[in-house]
Image (cartoon, helix red, strand yellow):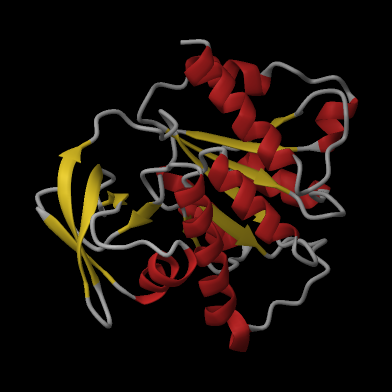
Length: 249
């Protein structure tokens, strides 16, 4: 059943849907009055709803019943990716959203090839956020991950202060066979806590960046014996979190 995020709280009895979602319901799905959809509120509650009225600009959907349960990971995982080239970040956001990421924070790594254009920042972030929204709807998420504009590593360190677990994926650790830091961190984390994990761009994290991060509380970890691409590593991490905290509980 089609799922749409609405600008309302869970005490609402009906929802007004406009903009691109209106177009999708009418033009793409060709729905009519009486058809059912799932509406997800700003506080993450889902309601089976029926389309009660269609006007020239909005759709009014009325709540049939509120749904129980949650499809969110039991911990909040923030993915900090060294800004990669091409559309790799879009891939990370789309697939990472499907796998349960809470937030995406691109950062301007020393080996990032892409030169960030501040003039195009708002438009770019808007596109990334749209990708996250569509992926959240497709994967039956109850929350849309937040995607921020790229930050410096110093700004990333400031953000890190509020997290329970701080990790940085480092290929040199993988080459040396390190396998305990991630496993131990996932065994010890409690539901409701948060993880921030840093991934390098195509060229990886520099030794100086590792030094700065570890001096500020990050633990360097390997992700198995194979060296993963910058767009693959975050998905490995999210899958590991899901396996440990959802399938093994």
